[in-house]
Image 1 (cartoon, one colour):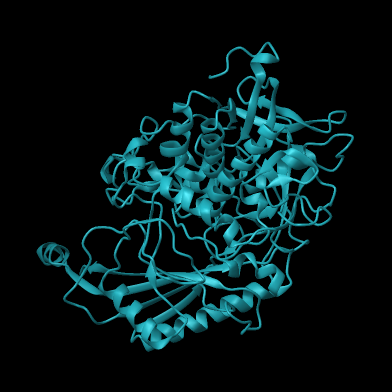
Image 2: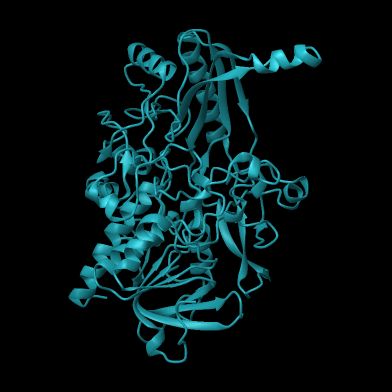
Length: 571
C-alpha cells in the first residue's frame, strides 16, 4: 500500500485529493500533478497496473476453462452485471459482482461498475465524439432541464488538448452537429458500410454515415510513444486490458503519466465515506475514507478536492457529506443534488441483409466497430413530437454458413466446406433521455454497506419521450434500410432497464444559478469553491453522443482553472 505512515496530519496532507481513478479521475491526477501539486488519488478497489494485471490478455479461446462463457451459477448469482455485453470469462474480473456491492432499486436499474484502479476505462467501448452547440444549447432551446453555463467554444480547446494526448481516430467530416477533432487516421468502412454511406448521402441532405471515432492509436504520435503505448493491433480483445496501450485507458495513459511526475500518491482499497467540511473555515478540508481491508477510518487533507467517483457514486459521496452548514449534502443549497439524473437509451436495434457485394468480405477487425450515424432529428429545427434526438451505430459483416445436415462423412464435408452467407447489417439506437426532477438518487435511510456507508437508492425510468424517440428511430432506419435495398429488415427492442448503456449522468449538474444547480461553469461547487466535480455527475443534459471525451475535456479545463485560482489565493 502506498501510504504507510498515516500517524501524522502532515503525512496525510496533500495539495489536492482526487476521488476515483477512472476516466476523469485519471485526467484530474495527470493535470494536477503536472502542474506541481502533490496529489493523493483514492480508489475504493484494488490496484490494476498496466500490462502486469491483465491476466487474460494473451489467452487463446481454448485456454479458458469455459471457452469464454460464464458458468450458469455465476450468471444466476449476478443477474444485473450478467446483462452487460462485456461480462464474460475473459473480463469478469474487472466487473463488480452484484452481491458484493448492493444498492436499492426503487425502479429497475442496471448499475454496471468496475471497482479497481482505472475503473471502467478498462471496459469502455472507446467511442469518442465531441458535443456541439446543438447539445450545449439544447436545454435552453427546448426548455428542458436548465441552461448549460458553457458553450462549445468554451470547451473546444480542451477537446483538442485531451484528444492529442489520448489519441482519437477519425475523419474530418465537416458536420456542424458533430465537430471535428485532432484525429489520427480513421479505421475504414468496409464495402457495404461505404455503400450505405454513399446511398444515405445521395438521398438525404442532413443524414450521414461516417467512420466511428474511437480512442485507438491507429497511427501513434510521439506523445503516445512517450506514454509507453504502441499502435493498436486490432485484436478486439480490449475489455481484457491492452498490453500495447492501443486504446486509451487511465491505466495505460494518464495514471502512469501522473506517477512519472513524482507527485502522485495512489491509495487503492479506500472507500470514500465523505468530504470533510469545516464550518468555521467555510471550505472543505479533506476526505474521510474507510480502508476496505482493515475497516480503519482515516482522514486525508488537501486544499482542493476533485470528485471523480463516477456519476452515481459521486452523488453518493456528496449526499453523505453532511455538516451543520450542509445538512442535506455538500453544496446542496439548491436541493437539486441527486436529482435530474438521466442516461442513454440503447434499447432499440435493427438488422437486415444485403445481397450485393458478394465478391467482397472483410479482412481483419475494426476496433471502431464500423460506422456512426450522427443525430439528424431536431437538430436545426424541432420537427418531431419528441424532444432531442438519437445517434445510431451501423455495421456490416459476413458470416460463414455451415451445413449441419447428414451424418458421418457427409456431415464432416458439410462442416468443412462452409461458405460465406449474405451480408448482415445492423444498427443500434443511442438516444438522449431527458433529465427530470423525478429521476433521482438518494441515500437509503437504513441500509449501509460493509464499510458503514449508506446504500444508494436509484429511481428512474423511461418516459413517453423515450418511447416516441424509439418509434421514430425504427421508422427512419427502416426507411433508410429499405431505400438502400436491404432485405429481411427486422426491428427489435430488448426492453432493458435503464442503466445498461453505462452512461448515467447528472445529479450534481452545472448551471448559471446556484438556486437550480450544484456546480458553476468551472465545475466548481457553487457554495464550496475548493471542491470540483468533473465526472458524469456534472452533466446538465445527456446529448446522444458518448460522454467520456467530454468528461476528459471538462476535467482538464477545471484542473487548469483550479490551479490558477490557487495561485491567485482565491482557493
